[in-house]
Length: 317
Image (cartoon, rainbow, N blue to C red):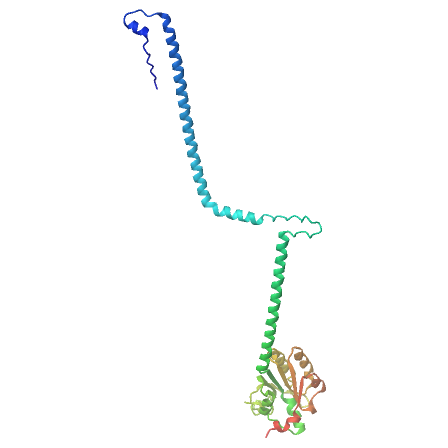
């Protein structure tokens, strides 16, 4: 920017314009004044320039501040939740302040809040456990009552196993023939029959009819499952069929589903079988003629039934 300075015409200049000669000493003050005026204007120009620069810098700083504020606001909106969570976690993880002791030395010290919280939590857990114990006892009592009702309401399950040769041979010696249909009804007597099995030997003759054989015929179509086995022939011409293994295996297999095992036999070889079944909590009933019953088998039975006492009811017509 070009500054133009206009000199004010003094009285001497007016005189010169009128044709008078100018004196040289009068020019020196004018030059000095013009130099000082030029310096002042230069200073003013520098000041205005510095003011303009400072203003521009302030505007730049304000713009930068506004941008940073906007970016911080956006970041705050995005990460505000995370900060709040971190602050909450920091507040939770911060140790609880310790309460100082009372001024009175004789008084008990004040328990810190952390210990109070632990004690309260332990008391709540103890109360919960006691409540659970009470509930468990009530449930056990209720189940026991239901079991008692179930036992009285439901019929005990019984399985009947007949050693056919032992009973028939004993009846032959006494001159008694039994009606095994009556025997089955007598032994069931209002209980739930799971299975009745009769173990009968059969002849190995090819022309012998199954249903007419002596040890099979009394049990056919009477509610028994007939288990057969051929006679063994010996050198002296005698025959024998032993069902100890088959009968014992069936009893042990079914004992888990029975409440009572009724063994119609007086053979002492079944003593150990009776002991094993009784050890499982199953009741053992032994049914036979007293004359052909081994003492050791009768001793391990929970109940012994002598067929002689009921011969009139069970005799075959």
